[in-house]
Figure 1 (cartoon, protein in one colour):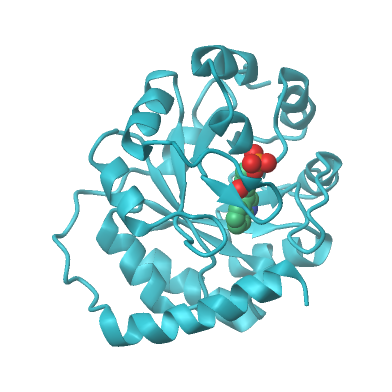
Figure 2: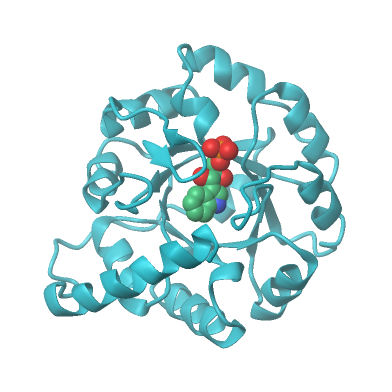
Length: 258
Ligand SMILES: O=P(O)(O)OC[C@@H](O)[C@@H](O)c1c[nH]c2ccccc12
């Protein structure tokens, strides 16, 4: 059983519980969507999605002392184009309350990073203030991926559709994904290789598709590698969470669009 299988098994339980205890739209309705797509597609630099992630299955504890709204404010002040919040509790020590607290503090789009397998998680993301949700091709059969994608779009959410190999990329294209995230980390083995983005991004020919490269960014040279392949945004977690000097980290990773 891979770690992804383990996480998905937990999600099945979580969704069953949610269906008992969570009533969509029971929360105060939120303000208008902030479009990640519109902001990133016209930016002059490679946009940075900075992530709030306390821990992960691959790295263990990363930073549990973090105060999410303060961290988010620092990200925004240093030019983050969007903020990603891990809301999975058992494996990443996050919560939906982190997302809600951050949404009120910053003006940039908020990505709800979780393992979504059911519509009710999309309802919840919207209710707590997400502008974008993550859907992972490796986690869902094509039909479900398609259904969840359409469901999220109908709720006026942007969708970051994550792929890691050619077959998943084909699926993402057939779903009509406008934002494709290429994860450099294999969720089954944890191996990280920025070459995955170089390989897959070159197979995305539609200039309207917004390509985001995810995971493993530490240095400016990493970003320079992927921008040559049409990547318009990068998703950075661990490097941000461990940084003792966010201004420096952002200026290192901020490169002009080619
Ligand atoms: O910490 P990193 O290597 O910068 O990676 C961030 C982000 O890409 C990673 O957290 C991530 C990418 N896809 C995911 C899916 C689920 C959970 C987490 C992720």
